[in-house]
Amino acid sequence: MKRTVISLLSLVLAGFAAQALAAEHEVGQRNKQFTVKDLKIKVGDVVSFPNYDPFFHNVFSLSPTKTFDLGSYPKGETKKVTFDKAGKVDVECAIHPNMQMTILVEP
Image (cartoon, rainbow, N blue to C red; front, side, top):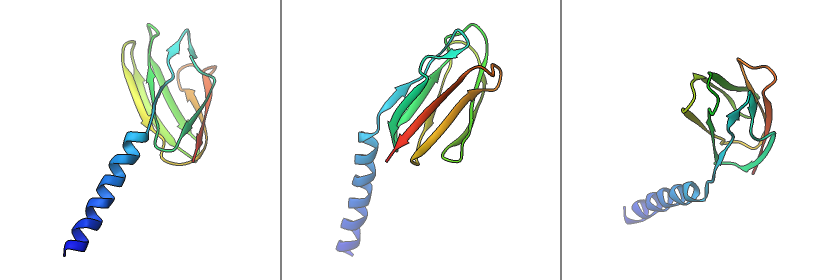
């Protein structure tokens, strides 16, 4: 029983350590463009997508590494995505087709 409790505690602490090592990155939306064209991050990192434009954006990705759709949101709102798998992620805006960027998630 004591060994099981210690094993469970070790797993919980390892999870907290992984979260503590995760970084947060920002990719803003300004002038119908992403503020970053290419971004390198690590597995477990979070990317926030604040909208600085006076109109709506809809950030999404159909990449196999990370598929997401943040929905339409106005100026002043920020949506976040956690990247849990290594690979290349192409990110776009469903409203403004010229808005494109790439996130490279490294192990």
